[in-house]
Length: 144
Image (cartoon, rainbow, N blue to C red; front, top):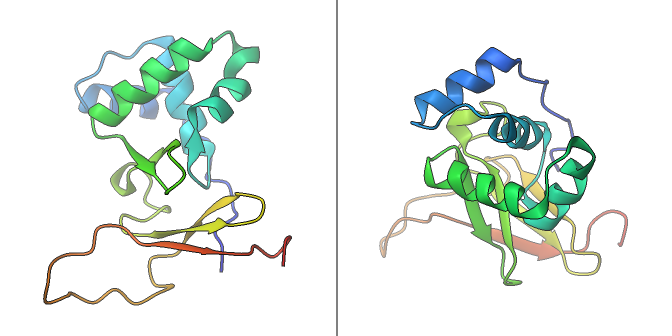
């Protein structure tokens, strides 16, 4: 089952507290980027988010700089899902509904990336080490 619901819109004070708690100044662009990330139900590329936020007055460089700052501060994760494109998403602690440990599904036809619930595929400790990321590829429901 693919997670498709959109998380609730956080209020300004909550966003500011998250930024300050991560050691960042609460600036207008950071709040805007963090709010947009909390509305996302799946990882997003810099280009996708920049296109979404251009009407709000943010350019591509500002969006990228803030995504990087939020990732370095530990509020976002930055992942390459095998296509050499960085995707950003909230860390589990920043979004309780998103879950800390979850897998991604990438449609090999249309490229859509979806988050899967943490219990979709059982993760058991391995004798050779600890699994940190699992990526599933296949056809999404629209392409199948």
